[in-house]
Image (cartoon, rainbow, N blue to C red; front, side, top):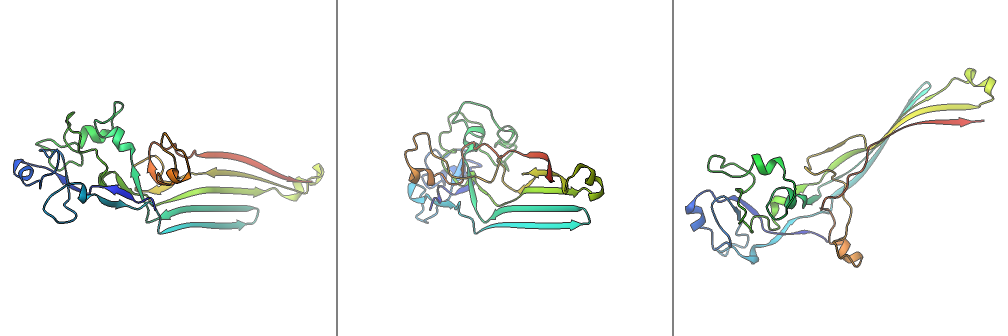
Length: 230
């Protein structure tokens, strides 16, 4: 369910000879993305589109750790996924000419030029209406580990509480979403389902699973608390 569909990126056309051998790819030109002949029929067309990523993780995990020493206690909750892909659709807006707005540093410094042939992006060409089609360039590893909750507490000595008729008191500091370990280039790898602009039902929302369309990231939260018992 919800697997990503498109062309498989096979590099960038480097010269006229490669363009001549493009197997009929529409829009083939020096400095543009080249699509892979997936089905091996010696031509590149819509029949070479296929599954290029899977948003469904192989593993969803969580881990609770706890430690106490004398009056101190510490707890940590880690959560994450492994083996899932993300379709980073924000690259359509930041890395290509298909949309008017801000651009990424990648577009400026990693686009193809005759002297930068190892680039990851096609050359800057306002007439290129082909390279930003759905393809494997958008697909990234979405695996991550996140520190969902980290808490450090200290229980005050009973001798300090007896006069105030307090049975126990504990002060703690807690952080939520303190850090995330991931190779994903977007803002947040923990994506859910979202609907398109004309979303009319749950089925359509499921089709957008793990597609980063500019999803707002979770916030980092720091707090101090006090537990009292009378």
